[in-house]
Image (cartoon, rainbow, N blue to C red; front, side, top):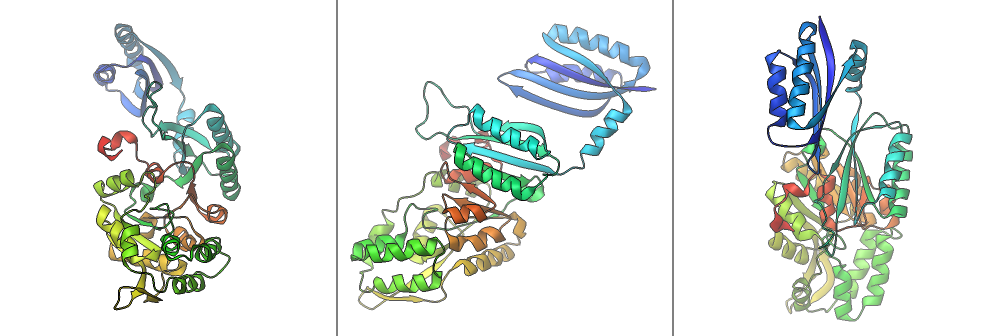
Length: 407
């Protein structure tokens, strides 16, 4: 006969503690049915479910008690029935999701709201992990980041309602939430496609060109309307290009050299390149600026719009080739994925405007970044509280994985 016993060991962690426990269990040929360990501020919580011959169980527990006393930790024993164990086994077939919560700072009220929502949806929390590094109280950073990842199991009662509530909670509590299936695709993303204007850079370059040309008010009004999805992108793009007629190309170089990059871009690009991601810019802006950013970060692909320049080095007010609009962005994402032999579920798209929605919907993970309300409402995930490096947490990266030089 065999017994199932759950061991729960708590106390101050130290090197060799787990090995000492396992030495005793190995001596009696105990089978390890399950094991899990967490270490929070050097405090150990170790759970081990063992199956051991009934004739050895008393001696095993006796030796473990002596060893726990020697190591100055607490150990408790819980007999488990076969029915209880089989119930645990049956639960492992349920869907697992990762709910990532991030913001400038996370407080009890925010975690309370998230955990209540998880419970209301009939989901159970399997684990909680902090992805960001510990924040110093004495020497706080100017722009802090806080991120917690919940591993949850089960099936949401209402997936659409969960999405709506997470959106409302994000706005009210100044947090961002990502709810994803925990599958192999989530852990093996390989291609990421970015919008450029108001995503990689904090500007709409066509507006900056218009400002230099003295037609800013007219162009900005058309840009804003297009980004809200009120007018067709192709039509708006054509109208704005005509207003730039006569602008000298040297102005484009000046603007490119002074682009205001979004918070977190340096860190994000460093990490993506380090871990082998393919990176693309799919922009309704202009290739001149996309190629400038490409050289700076070693980006793999750039697709944007080409402005026509006359023999005198001035813009003609026309463009060359096909406009990169929302439909074209989604098409390009599929094309690049095919070239790179990447499944669409392994792709990521990040953008802020209505013309980004097609590629956000096409990608395995679509992220609206500091986006317009309509875009946030229709995107799978959104980031509104921190910089672009927040994308890394939605991909499951921990600060401890990242080189300090990427900060």
